[in-house]
Image (cartoon, rainbow, N blue to C red; front, side):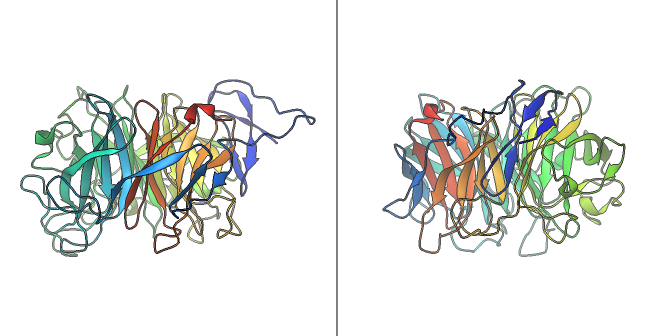
Length: 465
């Protein structure tokens, strides 16, 4: 075990589990290594138990129910649940239970199998098949109803929750009108209200947040800044920060009222402790690596002539492969780079970073070494969506090779499985997406992307080892 510097300057101990996974915890305290005589203790909730029904393996004492199933469950308007479940936001339901906004990552034009239905007033582009559904559940996670929140968007991948209880759904595509069957431009962020259906009518893109292959968003409730990840290649994508204009106050309707060039959209540039520019985040090979961050304004945030990430020379910014999940914690943003291969300076199977806006620093908290045997259960690779666990640490949706898991990482730095994809049909080895706890912390909602399942997992969450 090695000591590293945390973002506040405290020395903490790292821990190792799985296939070379290392994490510095998020607590501000001096952690000590266990004595050599101490018996090793397994983290989490114990080993996973195979599912006789062939869906989800969970620890003993846990259970799941299916909340939505693409093509099987139905919307209140009569159409089947759309396919390709992805990023999800969870909100407190008035009267008890949870309201969830579920992305449907459908890249194909409208007319494809199981699209988000085009309802009057809720459709942005008649040529696009993606969007979001809103799902209401009881306190135990069982389904009450499901309906369209927004339709006619494309490749709705991840997103982020706002401090005023709405969901930002992000299009992971940058297609222009007249291509791919689309009638309008795509590559934007849209806001979906889980409570007010009227607020979702006449959906409009938030052009101030740029047009690129958006993945996720994390909102700083105090400063109003929004951090945006980009999952793109050739060249690798960027991490962006949108800083609001003077006088802006985040609230219902504020984002919709922005002009296309309001605020400043900047791309991240990282500098190491020696003052040297860091061209790609994969160069960080040691947990605890901390970079100073500055934000370089994007010249043309709509990227019509030149994609935003291509408007910079490699010496101007810092790139990373597959910038995916983002989630706001109490005092900063968690950012995920799923993996890096030949397109990056150094190969890895996942990095999880923490950005501290107070210090303007980015610290590597979790590093996945290359998984040599992804088809063998026991190791993790390819983290994607991330959210905060109310029981400490984070929950990661695995989108790697071979066996797929929901992965927990404790504040003390140890990873453990929360669930495993146990399907044996075409859903085998399909990624998990959108893990998020209910506001009362009793239910973990999570999806398997294809064809599209949303699960509600219940059990003794408080008894984490």
